[in-house]
Length: 487
Image (cartoon, rainbow, N blue to C red; front, side, top):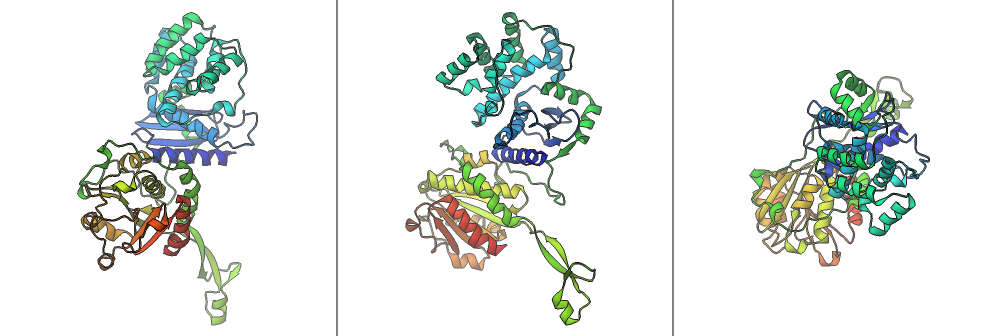
């Protein structure tokens, strides 16, 4: 179960990096394998870094875990990242303020969970879906009724669904109003005022003499107690570090490269281009396997189970074979994007999706290179990886493609690329692209197009080309015909 949790948390972390969701400070994401955090998850902010723990046993309390648990596990990380984005970092100050009003810290944690999940859900359009996995039961306790609304994600339901939840669990409208009031709070401090009003309608029972096990109480302890923090780190496995043996840090360029930029595509004021997330999720693993390490054999004197038959026949002293891991070097790929008006809609969405996949590979240190947006208005250059948010904002269309001028201005970048993928619809009208001249300069181009292949002729402009009806078909062809042979 631990391996499943680690895999899903790592996937969610990678997705959030690509989506540009995380705060600007660095993050450490760890799986707690022993100690007090194994059955929960928590975030803390310490030493100018966000530190998030996800317990290796978070599934133990679920009634059944034989279904698809991916979304549930990933929701733990999304919840704690939401705390990192929206919760007051000075938890001790919050604790002291609550104490002065006789408000239990765990109660504030409940209301704060409501607020930060609602805000995260609104910002990225992703539901947590807790109620699909956890059992919700009726209760006469007001806080338990509020908890049911939180787990049901009451604020995202339509009116019929809201009425059904209130009726099924006998939840009075006043509690639903408190839910709505909490979603309107701008920060952790405003939540305190909502809880104070709540306490007049629903007085808190006397505090039981037991330890507060809420996630923010863990956060406060880790923030204020260095010994507890060190113990938690030693009881956990950091999964956010780069792979062993890979010392190069890969970061996403937030700004374009000035030297190779004359036009800002992000300020055109157009509707953002949407990525095809389902295709990314489906096709990225297929592309990724091409770049992974594989194995081979080397001749050796040291005895092993595998003989070097050629060496035996030739009387060589290297009579055995030893299996070795072969690591592929990073591949330099550039992407030139046709941002002309005819690329509006699906063609631009497909281009953005392709770049998002290769940006993920760049983040994993499997490829490197640049993304160059081109139109008759100018060009803009980014170093991979680009975050998904940045891609959606900058991939805009209008005017002509401007390839001839762009190619001449970014020539030094294109010469470094083993392959320069040019994503276009083939309707090139603004100047010629001279394949012969590109060959002389060591620039190798590869045209890509998704749409109606019969209406797109890539041959006159590029050394190679692929045009397919569907994005998934194009990716399959890239894997089969291009990448396998070039690597």
